[in-house]
Picture (cartoon, rainbow, N blue to C red):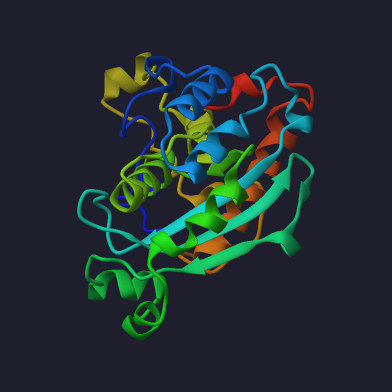
Length: 255
């Protein structure tokens, strides 16, 4: 994924709203409400698949890791060029069931984004429009808790991509591995001596690669949607193994 500014590398607390300030929906109820209102039958079926309850133990939660590559970082102007999905559970990653799509954006590719994600003009010219994969993408996400590293990207780009093709947006529950790292590494208030001598604690990077390194996970090639989805799945498993019990309720993590 293109990393915002690099947003995936922004110091904890420097982006967006904190979890405390963000109201987390009752996802089963919210999806039922959206199913009743959806006009497109594919979107209606997606919402009708529902979501597990917030008190479900993490070990029992069906999940799919998701990453998108884009033409740039502005969802209002840029578009998706590739999507990677990796089905998973807390202790199992189903790599053999992974899905990967390259799609043709309506926005122009720019040299900077091509350098990052290595998807060329020739590849996107031969690829289908995002609208052509909706029939495959929505069922692959239905009923799952989506695992991402920076929810602002995947949610915003997928929502706007659906609106541009079918006139309706997309909402879904996520576990954000970057937000989980931010909880652990948010900069604490400076102590007495730090205030006295004007010293500030160094910020901790919560980029995907740096977060993985803290758990002893290997380095992968960055900015390939399928590889980044797998990297995010592995990071979540490491976070769960180190910091959460298998019986921890889902509501403590999702947003």
